[in-house]
Length: 304
Image (cartoon, rainbow, N blue to C red; front, side, top):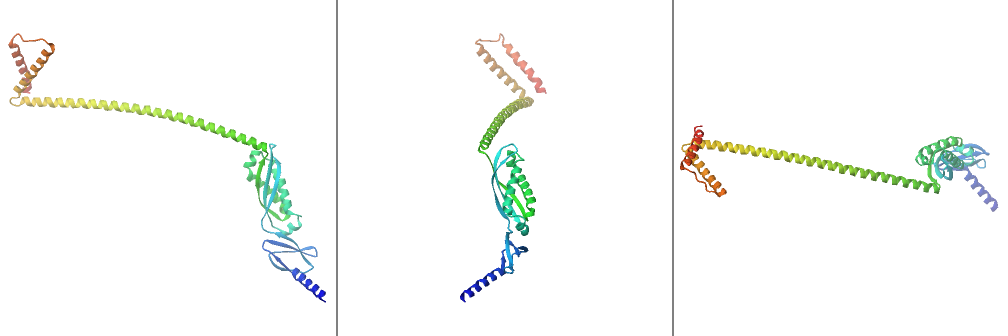
C-alpha cells in the first residue's frame, strides 16, 4: 500500500515537473514532440505534455566569446609566426544552431584558425603588425559567410598576439637598434650643423652691429665737429660784432688802440725772452710809427 502511494507521488511529481518549462531571459529552448521539432520557446513559463514533449536544446542568445588557440602561420615572406585570437559570435536562429551543425562553437573556432592562416599567408611580417584591422575584417567576413547556415552571426574577431620566432625577434631587435643609432647620428649631425649655422649667423650679426656702431660713431663725431665749428664761427662772429659795437661807442677806438698796444708789447716780450737776444729799435720813432699804423687800421673799423 505504502509502496504504491509512494510510486504515485513520484509519478505525480515527475508529471508536474515536466508539465512546466521555464525559459530564462538569456536563452531560447527547442521543444521536440515525439522526437521531431515542435516549437521554439522564448523566455517565460510554458506548458508541455509530459512524456510527449521534450526539451531538446537550450541555446544561449547572449554574445559569446570564444578563445582561438595559438597556431603556427607562415607569412608571405616565409617567416613563421605564432598567432592567436578571440572570436565574438551570437546565435541568431536557435533552430539552425540546433539542427544545422553539431557544435557551432567548435566549428567557429576551427574556421577562424583556418581563415587566420590564409590571411597571414597573404601579407609580409611587417604588414602583420600594421594591418591588424584589415585582417580582422577579412576573417570576420569569411566566418560570417560560413556560419550563416548555422544560425550564428560572427560579430567581430580580434587578433590577440602575433609572435615571431626567437631568431626573428633577435634580428628585429638588432634592426631597430641600428635604426635608432642611425637616427641618433642624423640628429647629432643636424645639431652640429645648426650650431655652426647659428655661430656663423651670430658672427655675421656681430660684424654688422660693430660696423653699424662704427658708422654711427663716425657720424656722431662728424656731427660733433661740425657743431663745434659752427659754435666757434658763431662765437667769432659774435665777438667781432661786439668789438665793432665797442669801437662805435665814444672812446671805443682809443680803448682798442690801447688793447692792441698791450698785446703787442706782451708778445714782443715773449719773443725776446724766448730768443735770449736783446732787440732794441734803432730809433724811437719806429715804435711811434707802429702805433700810428695801428690807429690807421682801427680807424676804418670805427667808421663802419
